[in-house]
Length: 527
Image (cartoon, rainbow, N blue to C red):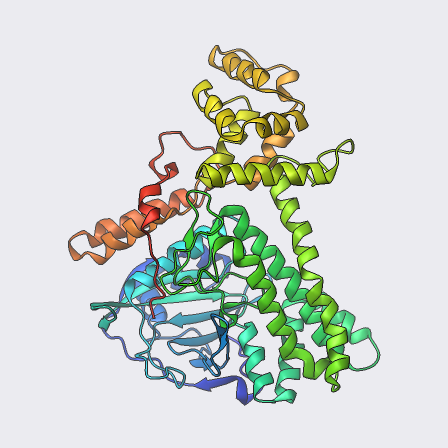
């Protein structure tokens, strides 16, 4: 019979604290992710019985060999080292082996106080639990590496935040809950043997190929493992940030305790989505200085990776200067690595398979064109998602003349330059649209942009979890008189958001920008 394992807890007693989950006799099942339950191969009986699902999500019953413990870690919060943090309102149940042989953590958030609660109540309000469920599943569907949500239960308890509100528990599913702050704690407290165990463990669990390479090397295995882990995590973080920038996601609280070693999006408290393209966009109410603004996120990723490197220095070499000489090239190399990945991502959004845009073109010219078109989006406050959707339709010959004229007005000469790189022009796009309206069959000439259009559709979502609709679903669920409607709305929205790259009808409500709403929108951490 399949059961939880506890490889992380068995690593060392210093990495966790055993603690009991609070008793929740009035827990009620609100949301259950049966698709995810099937993907991670949870028992079929559990997938069919809501009572068992509710009991699992509230921690009142267990799968075989589950436990309850909180993880210890430190972290920088908005640039300031906060010392020991740890799971103040989360309990790990264990690592569940999937049918593919990989492990996923199952963790309950909002399940009660732990030794790390620091005076907090250990609870989670219903609103933040619903937000995490909505956003994590929407990001996963968008192709963004992300922790997932197995379900949400209401606890029946009243939680005091800005005022009284209902309590809830959300069950997180992640590759692991190791974070930069985990390594910071054991470095800061000079628990170097534990730091070494942690490094080898993380490398073996998340980067087995690199772990195998380290094993084959002669010399200091701790040093080799630390450098290999740092390099691998940097690569994953670069990939993650490119996905965030691709879809217009703003995390809102990129503290080192929220930076996953596995390269997944974790902690959805104050996150938001870009509507109008504004590189300086900040929605988090606690980010008063704009540290984690949309365009600042790559620099903050770099900063977080520097903190990881600092934590690993004791393993890299006992001589600090020698350790710095080995780690510095990896940190200093991040901007160039990110720049290459970032412009490749943007080239794909504009329909080019790589930044060279064809052998006959200068990569610098395409970069300049991309920058010019993004600057036009910012100047005219164009909707980020809809702008790329319209550009895709223009290249496909599917955009109506009025919208085509608007694009020409906003982008001016850069639109002609972009079409020119694709071997087309506005007149040809208009003629293809006219031919489609008249029911003409496209010929070979009309197929010449198919691969570019397909690339754009694969990288530019039609639907994103827009802030207005996320808040609408949450607010209706919090309102007792519309709670059932709110839960139905969540399911309806998620059903649409599970197909974010499918062509949608223009009149689909979820496509529409709510710019006026975003202008005054603020998100909150929820703690």
